[in-house]
Amino acid sequence: MELPASTMKDFEQTAFDEKKAYVPKEEQGQAFFDDGREVELLHFIYGHPAIEEIRGSPEKVLEAIDEYGRTKKYLMNVGSDKGKIVSDLVAEVKPQVMVELGGYIGYSALLFGAAVRKAGGKRYFSLERNPEFAAVIASLADLAGLSDVVKVVVGPSADSIKRLHASGGLEHIDLMFLDHYKPAYTSDLKLCEHLDLVTPGTVLAADNVIKPGNPPYLEYVRSSVDQKRKAAESEQSNGIDIKSQFGRNAEQYKKREGEEKLNTEIKGNPNLVYESKLVNSFEPTGEPDGVEITRCVGMAE
Image (cartoon, rainbow, N blue to C red; front, side, top):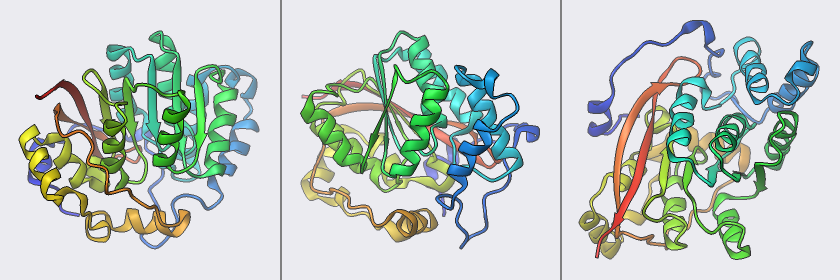
C-alpha cells in the first residue's frame, strides 16, 4: 500500500536490534494468526522451565512471549520498540482509565497495564472480539499478577464501548490504544467522541499507521475543525473503501473473524481539536512502522 504523503515525509529510518527480531510473518495467503498459535503460546509459557520465576512478573511474562515470537512463530504484538513509546506516554499522562481496542494475546495489556498501575491508575480495559484470544489475555494477566488492573471485555469493539458506557463502567477515556481492525479506528474514535468518552485531555495512540497503514484515520486526526465540520456535513468521511485502502489486513481479518460491521452513521464530535504526530519505530520483526500520538487539546465553539 502506498503511504500518504504526510506519513512518508514524517518517516525516517532508525536502527533496529536484529537480535530481538521475531520470526518473519507468514507469506501472503497464509494465516499469521488464529491458527492455534495463540493456545500454543499458553502451553509454551506455562511449560517454561522458569515458570515459577515468571509468575507474578509482567516483565518476565512479556519476555516469555517475546521468546516464543523469536523462536517459534510470529505474533502480531505491538512489540518492545513501539511498546516503549506507549509506556512512556502512560508515565507522562498518568491515566486513571486506559482502554485498548484489540488485545490479541495480551502483550499490550500486560505492558501498558503494568505501566498504568505504576503510574497510579485504576483500570486498563482490554477490548477483544475473539473469545479465545480474550481467554489468553485473561490467563496471562492472571499469571502476571495484573488481574486487579486489567479487565478483559469480549465482543466487537463498538458494542463493548457502548455497553461499558451504558453500564457506567466507562465514563471517560484518559488514554486509548488502537490496535484492532484497522478500518474501525476512525468509526470507533467517532463513537467515543459521540459518547463524550473522548474529550479535551484525552490522548490517543494508534498502532500500525505505516505497516499496514491507515490513511482514513490519519486524515481524520490530522484534520482541522473546519475540515472535519465540512466532511461531516457532506458525509464524505463516512465512505471507506475497505478493500482498496486496507487490502490483505482486512481480508485476513474477515476470513478468520468474520465481517466486521462498521457504524458509519455516527459523526463523532468534529469540534474537538487534535494535535497529532507520528513517532517512528519498528514492528517486532524489524519492519518499519510507527505510532500516531494524538492529543485532544480543546473544543472549538
